[in-house]
Length: 419
Image (cartoon, rainbow, N blue to C red; front, side):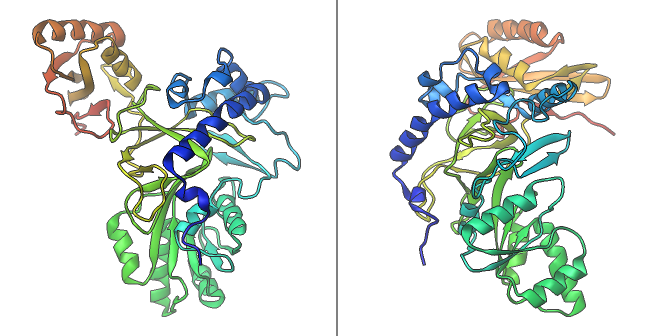
């Protein structure tokens, strides 16, 4: 039995990077020519010139709220495109299903085998061809159920469409069908296992699980392990499909082979230094829904070195919070992008963090600035002027030594008392 899903997982890192960058210009050209929205976003871009990460970093980031705005604007027009011009396919055999996320944002599902690229993550979680999987992700509105089912079928597995709810029936189905494992949220499997214990029903066949959709802390991982269930995380979104997955090394998440991932400073499109926390931005090689530099709104960081399992793709720490830290201060919204704009005005500034303190209606904002500048008083005064210019608010400036600020991806920290 093979140790890896395919040979792509153990490619030389340089070979993988070369292959991704070689595919990028063609994908951008396709997106520009076949997607109305990307045609507008990339109108001034020469796809042939974008064959490196440095060049990719010069393209605009599209964030979820912008995708929603384009969809809403398009839906208001008679005969408008419900996908806001991002999809390259139309209704019919090339688009078997449509799903909806809160907003609503509508997501198309293409006809390609393993369209969401979930089979690789399932393999890393221990699932193998010929097994039965109990799938407890939702099958209605959101794509999670279909994402997992299509991946399981691509892997060669049979699926029981458990969906959500009906806990006693879930216990009964697992006891009778004897699936090899479970896919769904960790909290729902815990509910099922607890209910089975209450009913006096044993579930000995469930030895593995792949989780998504919510946090999977070590305490819950250990709880399942004590009951003979090895649980693994996957990181996927309704827009992009699989982004990264956990392996038996339990040391971060390995990036999927079908995406190009960048970690950028929140509110900007600027890549951060390796190891620094920032927003996960993804360019997918999916021709049906070719999202380019799509901001997930999730925070993570790159881990150094390859996975101990022998998989050579880049690893990230996993989900570390949300990147959108927009905060209302004295009646004005302050965005992470504004704080980044202030920092960009001063070459001697390394990192910044706006800390908001006090009580509501009596806010104090302090911009903490990492710098080794020899003339702090003059610099602080200029930064204070920039704060007023950009945010239209007055703020204090505190200069700190390089490396003093936490590496948590926060541009704005709301430390106010709401009592």
